[in-house]
Length: 414
Image (tube, rainbow, N blue to C red; front, side, top):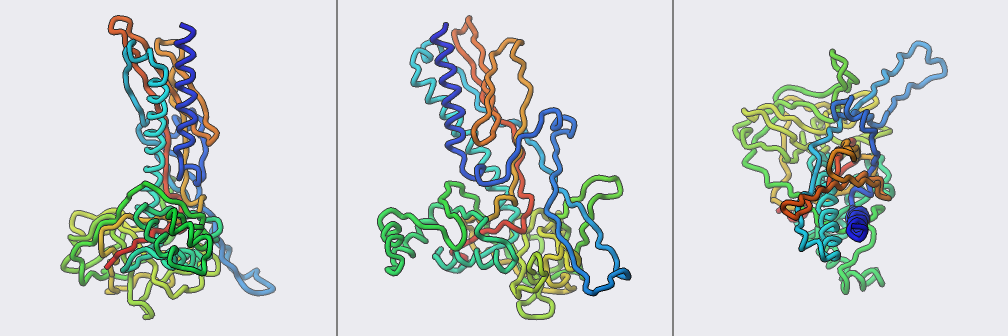
């Protein structure tokens, strides 16, 4: 019995260590473990505040000026169903300690992949900065992401970039042909290894979240001037999600608009161009803001989009409101996997625990990894069938809290 319990302890230890080792994106984002009682009392919905911004007034005597309204913007993080790995092992199989250890590692790999994939998908789906190119991914295309951050007042050196395997290979090939890059060119040529691009720490990822090709959506326009005013809470005191708004559009093909589409509003360089602005100074970047479709009403006329169009005040993110009849131009021309760039505080991961009693039958082991993830393994033996049943689980909420600091790069958009 002692030897068997020791094997189970080792199995759990390997599970915990492997989980941490397999986490990639979850190590780069803001994370916290929430008290289980707090999770329960909040019905497993947690509201987290977005960053505050401010406006200025000029003058020595400002007594006649109005106070800026302080708006506490909050974003809901919802704990989804717990993620589990469940399996049984017979008394024969459990004679091989190596098999047990490897199965524990496999459980860790799968759960870590679920967390990282959820984070990646949330970020890609909500990203509001889109860098696109007609051709293959190049070194300069990656640097365009840094430019997009700098234009908006986001510190690129605090950012991360994750490239899918195909585009990572493409940028390595591009870098491999640049003799002036010396050792980095050699590494790119021989090992497909690339350095940080721009100010970003750059990594290769096996996540494959694609942005699908747009449908036939020519002739789409804004139907009536529209914008959004940030608020803290609604009439019932519930925090309002300021990341999004509804946009009414018109056109013969609006029924073909779908969630995930990327678009701009207005014509570049014209008075109706809805440009991105610097987040702090509010200066016009003269670059069209890109928007994402989150949901489409059945008629296709009403879209839920992100970011919300905020043309004035401390949370201004665009140069002008969306004008009536302004062109809506969709730019996702081909289905391609997205590359992700972001700041660590723009994506958040919250862990919590479920209560598994230790005195009601199954044995329960709990641990917290070095990365802060609470993990649980429970198991029970059925002497009639000579099998031990195992359950590994983790409980988390993941969300793109600040989409305006998250971007995607799409190559081959010809």
